[in-house]
Image 1 (tube, rainbow, N blue to C red):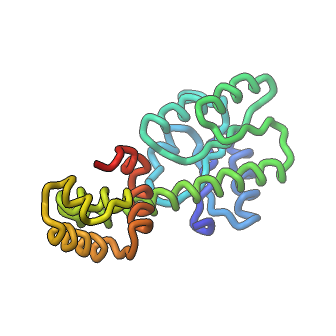
Image 2 (image 1 turned 180 degrees about the vertical axis):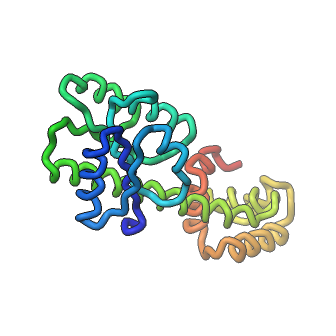
Image 3 (image 1 turned 30 degrees about the horizontal axis):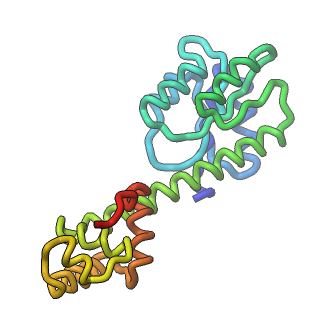
Length: 210
């Protein structure tokens, strides 16, 4: 997914915007340049991972204000702030609200490239985790309500006899449901089922088995 990443440069200075785009493209990144926070919001579409290289001070909507809007809209791209002299306190505030890093102008190219590379790696990992979670949830969504009950107890390691007693059904019925669960989720053991359920929802097995 790294090769699909897009670096969004958001800066109202045309010369710096072009220089940043050239820098990132020179090392193989795809770049989308935006003259304002509003332009970025209008152009952004969910899909590719990446990061936002964002000037902290801009007219109209500032970098800090864009950060808040991104959080409100669940735009989960990491932000590397570019700060001018005297903006460090603002950058610290931004990092407290989830910014990935901040780079003070003037900066060395390699320092910025390293910060962006780290942000992109974190974003790619986040996207991969989301895709894995969604795939696991979709797999479990194939189960009927009764099969989900059986699956949770199986994942807790309970034998068929205990599951039958807990759900007030026969062992034979538990066996049939258990087979269906394994077939529909393509797992072959209680441990694999437990991992699948935790991947879909980390809290799914917190409730003790009956």
